[in-house]
Length: 266
Image 1 (tube, rainbow, N blue to C red):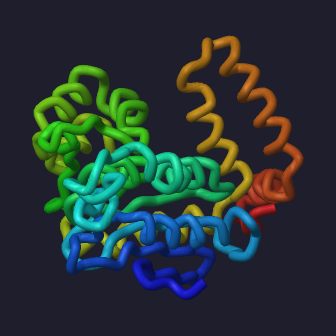
Image 2 (image 1 turned 30 degrees about the vertical axis):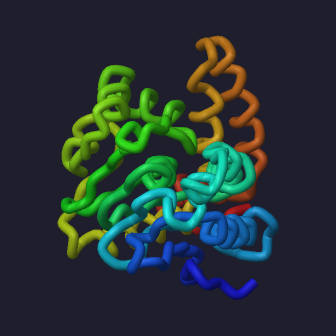
């Protein structure tokens, strides 16, 4: 499909999805989310050969969250009862689940404010790199709503219950450097270094053992709520799958021959 609200590009095994509504600080509505789902599904369905996905925003922000003026919160205020959860079921949550289920690594490049649903998508990355001027915000309480798009699942696991709860109940900005200190994100870099740092990480992941990387990303989430014994079994199953890949055979051979591995993603 032709995209109106996002940019999609592929180079050197890296697919980049850019939310492209800079005049609205990349606010999200059903139309934007549907385009993002379609783009992500290219990787899921094999229409794209990308071995890493990067998600970022155009202009001065990552995403300001749901577009309250464009039906992003479930409908127009003042025109009858609003179901603020409906669009979550049909669009926002669908995208989050698609991102979690990707068979390739997923990097988010947070180039500015990441608020509401935008905060959730930013923090959903396997590796999150943020510009020094970026910040993370859960402002739902300021308009009488509750955090959504996985925020109540993600944030306590990343920052701990006390920090996540205060962040949500006070609705205050969390600067990128604080987010890094709290363990919410991987790294903070100067604004003018963000693109280069993201590209370097993405290229490294795209050149890696794709199936093993997918098993790592899925295995970590799968084990978050399991007992140690259950987690050991998950690792056992995943190691069986990883050990049967061509990349494992190549990795061992390269180690023995003292040369860099040439992984193919198989």
